[in-house]
Amino acid sequence: MASQHSESGLSDFFSGDHHNCDSKWVRIEALLDSGDSASLGTAWQDFDQSTRRHLDMEEEVLFPAFEARSGMGQSGPTVVMREEHQQIRALLDQIAVAIGAGDTEEALDLGDTLHMLTQQHNIKEEGMLYPMAEDVLGEEWTELKQKLAIY
Amino acid sequence: MNGGMPNAGLSLEQAPHLLVPASFFLMVPLSLLLAGAILMHAGVASLSHPWNPQVIALTHVGTIGVLLMGMVGALYQMTPVVAGTPVAAIRVAHGVHVLLLTGLVCFVWRLLGGPAFAMTLAGYSLAMALLGFLLPVGWSLASSVTRDETTLGMRLAVASLAVLAAMGLLVARGYAESGFPDNRFLLTQVHLTVALLGWVGGLIVSISWQVVPMFYLAPSPAKRSRQAMLGALVAGLILPFAAFAMQPNNDVALSPTRLAAVAALPAALAVWFFHPLLTLHSIHQRKRRRTDASLLYWRAGLSVALLLVPLAAMASLADDYRWQILFGWLAIWGWAGMILHGMLTRIMPFLVWFHRLTPLIGKMRVPSIRGLLSQGRIKTGFAIHLASLVLGAATIVTQSDILARLTGLAITATGFSLGSSLVHVLHLGQRHLLQHPIK
Ligand code: HEM
Image (cartoon, rainbow over all chains, first blue to last red):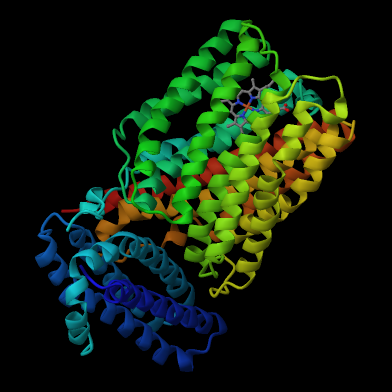
């Protein structure tokens, strides 16, 4: 049986990172609105990197460990999650183009779209996948956390 | 090892086909056209006295045609996501759709002067539709391992629907010439309490806990306050049933019907006072500072909700029947209808985008969700809805026939505006898919 402490660790870690990315998007929206293009570049990079980092951590560490432990590979929940990650990455690319071209409205609208896509994605992860992962990976969490530290 | 795991969660791809929610959502503007036609045809009679058949007809075009259709569509969509379990036998939803529409049309037909058998037909159609909806959705919610307040609130709403429908059907027998039950007025009072507070209130409250923080990055209400609201809601839904144990009396001040109304107070305060106050506050503190057009609807609907407890008090204390009509009008079209309308303008483009455009992402530049339904269109829909709401309230106060017909016109315009928006979104999504077939 996993300890209470390590059980809450996994979910909190990844959910907390979702909120972290949300706050970074809020900042970009504010900068796009105020037309502060000087700060926009760095804020965008920060958001873009944090989001991709989150996706990588899941795909390279969490999902393989979960798939191995649960035996759910090809038909499991991670398949859909990986697909949605690809969609999120492609939308990030599209927003970067809009920001680069100075098309504020397009960037805001695509950002809103990305927000909706990630929120429904996060509900599924936070409501289902993380609790399931906590169930099967509780004991390995300390070890996994060390692997995540390099990201 | 797998003991605590939701089995159905093996795949997270559980959303129903787009046509399931969309077919119910499209009934909303259609019902608005029907409501507009009733108002234009029957005039002020449809906003006059609570026991007037035209009023009951118009009420149910609102509660079944607009609210129930929209909410059933939303539940088919949301249940798998929130509860983590798919809805079984989802194809039944198409039958539910046809039966609900048949039931509604027959119900209205009878009340507007049609034959008694129309109500019998309405009763059977509605009963079958609701069974076809309640069994699979109720099962999915009941078997979900998720125990958060949103899921609890959704369960409460669905259970309330079963109870209110049973009571409504009992009273409806009277219109099918099978005789009204002895306690008709008490049954109707509890029917509308469970309907507005348990079914509509339970769903609005619990879904708001999910979507307001999610769409606008607004702070979620504290777990304790969510639990307290649910507790008050349950108490206010159960207490009125005590009135059925009372002996009927002629004391108007202490009649079972009035006591049933008073006993619902905890639920009324939770749904029409604490929830709107807390949600308006949370929207005010949201992190995404941009005002998305859908926020207009939330703000307006929640502000109207704050008028409903005082209005309900006047409706049950004052002799003037206009209070009751005003209360019903504002509850159905100003609070629930407003929030539902706003949600549709947000959910429908999202669903179309999600189902039709996500496969294209990365292969080409895809339009944004807002690109499918512009903010301008959403704002126009809001303005027309608001105008019809104000016109209706003015009609009720003045009992002016011409204002009633104008209200009908404004409701018809709202129906056209929403209908054209929904069709526009579906059409754009379809066109995109056809122009860029997935290889
Ligand atoms: C199975 C579906 C339903 C049936 C068969 C039904 C039936 C009825 C009937 C027959 C009455 C009139 C009572 C009388 O004449 O004494 C009534 C009143 C009422 N119902 Fe329903 N109903 C249904 C669903 C709903 C829903 C879903 C709501 C709200 C969300 C609702 C809200 C009301 C209200 C507010 C009244 C009072 C109308 C007035 O004062 O004029 N009903 N219902």
